[in-house]
Image (cartoon, rainbow, N blue to C red; front, side, top):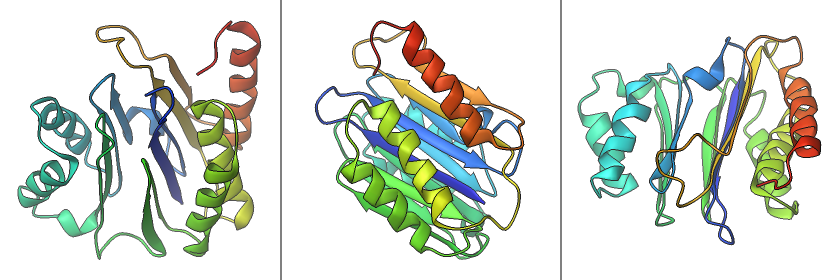
Length: 208
């Protein structure tokens, strides 16, 4: 299973993403984020260039929908891709190809997108959405809580191996991400990510 949520906080302007999957080092391939520009997740049969080139197109001023259409047009294997994009102007776009592993789907909300494949049921996406909308506090905690709720909603078809949590504050161009936490290989990566995040919270004065 691969399950992701990406969002922009309406109050702070922070951009973020949280993802987990059965493959190693998901934080190195699926989520892509740039301060003041946008956030992209590319998964299923992941093509990393969707994230790299997608951010370049957003930076040039193209909307997420136009960016997505341009990327798909150049990809002969587009039907095996799952992609979600949010830009700094609160615009969204998402695509789930017909050849992505079942069960699969995505939800586009108000400044957030949830995408998943190899799900036990697409209702997992609804549990992620409900938790994200009802949770309080900073964007990072809400994203992680939403992924935790999705995993609780149903058993995976495969063991999970890696997870990642990324957040970028606005007006921090040229600087490292505010949060970039990764679990590249673990028998319970989301639980381990929560442990690392809680330590991060205890050791940093401001949590975003």
